[in-house]
Every structure is written in structure tokens, then in C-alpha cells.
Length: 295
Length: 310
Image 1 (tube, chains in turn brown, cyan):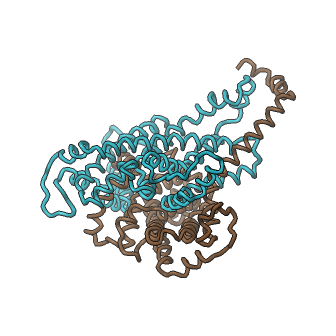
Image 2 (tube, helix red, strand yellow):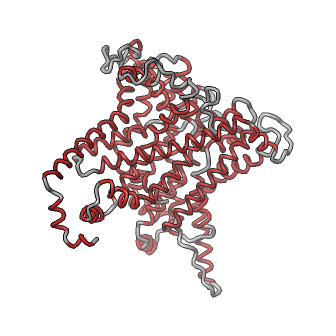
Image 3 (tube, one colour):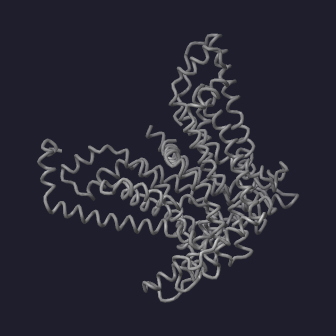
């Protein structure tokens, strides 16, 4: 740190002709690395997209066609024209919407309690909520099977909504508690003086302020619910109750060589999450990072 | 959760204060009640059930079950396939976490580089996050197409003369586990990348400037500033990722179903098979309990680590 007293001289010394050549070299390598990375991450996705607009006969063409020779939307038409396949999407939307609404409701309420009140067993309760996220889904699945049958929810979308909430509520609570903590308590007092109860304080004043947090929790919850596979596979049975992730695999098992159709379904299947992600990128990323690192 | 501890005064509480505390408790629990209801029904009950199941002779599919103590656990650990599943799970988890971290770090550093134009950086960020948007069942189907013996990966590798005949990535017992790990790495690194990127942006720039003045090169700066500064994030993420990958089910199950010849059997697929193919719910419960206990130990370490930081 002794040289830190002469910063100007040292930095100038670093800017010789050799340094600028090194900089250029680093820049070249950086671009190579970035493009290789983009190929690794995006190449498969691009292949999915082009395969979905190829006729099925062209999928394994040798040599492979990187740009479809015959462009066709037949695979998309087949999926969107088939009520059985559209049903998978409707089910996924229903489940995801239900999970988002109920999770936000429970998460906002609990987050408010944890942020604004001191109550008995608050500490242990918070610790339990964190550790719930580490419980393996496969461990829960075995008793769920019996439990869901007992609740008469087997093979219904409610079974999925209820079980997904176990995974989404803890995250929602952590995020909402954090958000409410950033809102000064003076606001609550002001509302209270005006004669408002806690319920009114929460829903009329805190919730609108916390909207960015709620959006981020909602988007994340939607994604978890939309993508879930294990419970959807096991707790539903009838085709008419299947969600997209299971539905795609069902089609895969039945006509496994309709690859363009599989790919079209995959594109449609990830579209909602992709759109959500592109719209709420900042909240998504912020929420994810905060949730994972600052619990 | 850094809830402030309940403030307790040593004096006997004033009656008014006591009634206020009672009211606060009541209000708070009213607000907590939806969560408590769901968790009591769908978390506490099943956890208790699975522990009870694991000590019974058999359940769910049979009427009369008897208490057998730890016999199910003895059977489980006596099964060579279960021991193999433990080994595979460890290998799968360790490799996944390591490569998630390495790739995530590499991509985050590239995106964060001052030499990268702002626009290019934000475009590439979206591209790099893409794999994370896909649900496991889509990820697996996509890679089944790409890694098909007649697929594009084999074509590219043959064109580059890296392999001389078509490789069966999923059905070759020597390759299957590596293939599944490869897919899992692709699907999971963005989570690390995003967090590390946020962490990188939080490192004060003057730290780097000071190091540069000290004559530290790029590598020196990375190991002396970047890594120590990011260490809390790295440790936290690695532990979370460890827990999640240890429990990973859909990618393994859909890619290989645990085969060929149990080459990709993990504790999760083994448990699933016991319950839903062989209908041995008690053994499955015991296997689930093992996974649960290991997860809880790691989670405990994680919570301790987070507490120590605060």
C-alpha cells in the first residue's frame, strides 16, 4: 500500500504501448470467451427454435440444417388446434395463478406480522420458515400421496396448488418481511392515529408501497409453479389434469418421433416464464439474489 | 431472518403493557394463520408421517403394518444399489456445484468486465440466463434431441474429428452419469452467475484501483480482491446449490430414469422407484428420511453461516 501515495505516476507507467497491446489482447480473448459462452448457453435454445419450425423429416437430416430448408408452422398449428394439448396449458395457467394469488396472500400477511409485531415464538417460527426450503420434495411426496387421497384432492389441480404453496410461501415471506422492513413504521402510526386498524394499514398503505417486491415474488412464484414436475407427475393421473411439464413428457412417450412438435410445445411451454423474465428482469434477478444470499 | 429478540423487562409487566402484548400476539398470529395452517397440514404432518412410515413394515398399499424399528434402514444400507445411489448423488452434486460455480463466475466476470460495451453486456446477460428459464422436462427433451445418436452434437463432434463414431450419450453406462451431470450444469449455472454478478457490482471500485496501483495483475486482483469479497456469496450459494442438487429429481429421472444398470441412480430416483414402481412405501420413506436428515444438516450449517455474517 506504500505506492498508493503516488497513484498518478504508477497509473501513467501502466499506460505504455505494451500495456495497450495487452489490453487489446485481453479484449480479443474476452470476445472469444463471450461468444463461446453464448454458443453454449444459447445454441441449444436456438436449435429448439429452428427445430420447431422444421418439418419432422428434416430434424435428423444429414448434414443437419441449421436454417430450416422448409419453414413450417405445422407443429404449432397441431398443438394449438388440439384441445387435449391446449388443456395442458390451461391447467398450468390455472395452477400457477392459484399458487401466485394464495402465496401472495399468505406471504403478505405473514411478512407483515414478522415485520411489525413482536410475538411469542417469532424467532423459532422464522427459523422454521427458512429451513422448510431445504426439505426434499421427494421426502414429502411419499406421505403426500396418502394425505392428498385422504383430503379427496387426488387427481385435482387443488392438490398441486396446495403442495406448491409449501415451496413458495417461505420465499414469499422472507421477501415480504424484507420489503416491509424497509418501510418506516411511522407510516403505520400515522394511519393508526387516523383511526385505521392494522388490516387497513396493511392492505391500503403498505401493500401499494411494496408493489415492486410483490411483483418480484409473484413472478418468481409463477415460475416455480409453472415449472414443477414431481408433484404434478404423481398427484394427478387423468390426462385432463396434467400440466405442461408432464404433458410434454406424455407426448414424448407416445409419439416420440414427432420432434418438431415436441420442440414447438417446449417453445410454447417456456414462453410465459420467458416473457415474465424479460419484463421483470430486474426484480427477478434482485429477488433471486436477495432471497438466496440475504435470508 | 434477523428478527430482533423479544425485549423482556425484568420488572413485572404493567397490566396495560401486558394486555397490549396479548393483543399484539393475537393480531400477529391472526396474520400468520394462513401460513401456519398450510404448513401444519402440508409440511409438519407429512414430515411426522414419513418418519412413522419409515419404522413400519409397509404402508399405504397394505392394511396391517407392524412396527419394525430400524429394520428398514438396515435393509436400505444393505442394498448395494442404495449405496451406489449415495455415491452417484455425491458425484452428481459435487460436480454440479463445482461447475455451476466455475461457469457462473466465469460468465459473471466476462459480463462485468469494463472492456465489454454496456449494450453487449446486457444482451449477453439475457442469453446466459436463458437455460435457467426452462423447466426440467423441457431441458431434458431438448438435450435428448441434441444428444440423439443422429443428433447435431454427434454431427459436430464427428466433423471436428473429436469422436469417430456416433456416441450413445444416455444408454452407455460409462457415459450416462456424465451426460446427466452435463445437462444439470447447463440448466443450473445461471443461478450462480446472477448472484455473483450482483456481488461483483457491489465491490467498491477503489479496491481494484488500489490493487492496480500496487501492481497486481488481473489474476492477482481476482484472487486477492474479487474472491475474498465474494466469499460470503460463494459459500452461501454453494450450500444452497448443494442442498438442491442433492435432491434433484426431474432431470435425472427424465433423462435416464436412473439407468442404464443403475449408472445414474441417485437417492431421489431410488426413493421414487421404491415408492411408485415397487410400492415399498416404508423403504421409500426410510430413504426419504435419510435424504431429509442430510439436507437438514447442510441447512443448519447454512443458517449458522448466515447468522455469523449478520
